[in-house]
Length: 194
Image (spheres, one colour):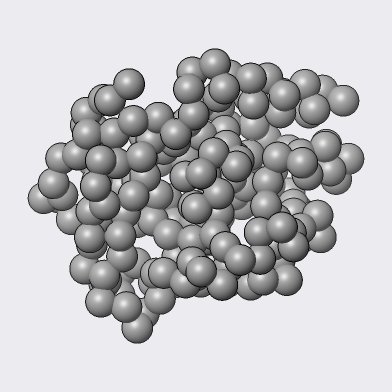
């Protein structure tokens, strides 16, 4: 089902390029956030319920990804300061923001993402007093990528970036069918319940 993209503001969530690829291929529907070092509030906050995904290689390392996805790290090295532009291929719609506070609950999510269990635990333990936000995302593929000129504003450890106001409109279609998305969402929610 083809839809038209209409974002209130051209905002993007920065995520490892390997994770963006996994989302775009329907291999996972979640991302885990605590907030970047340069976040204004020092903790993660959802700034929009629909946003572009901005792939980047900042902090991305093969040893932090499960072996089955190592090729993603080698092949997806976008979003570095040396590049002239970044291709935006996906839009995400927030389906749910689940807050996780303990390792046991986090361990139950392991089958649903590309990160190593050790890395997931490190994310949970960073800023211990704050929950780990597990964002369940409905991903849509743009009919054609939008090339964004690279800017110093996009660099660094931050979750959200503002893109140019004059982005071209694109049609989009869901990566997963409604039924497939809801089934994966149900499996994640059941896993969290234990």
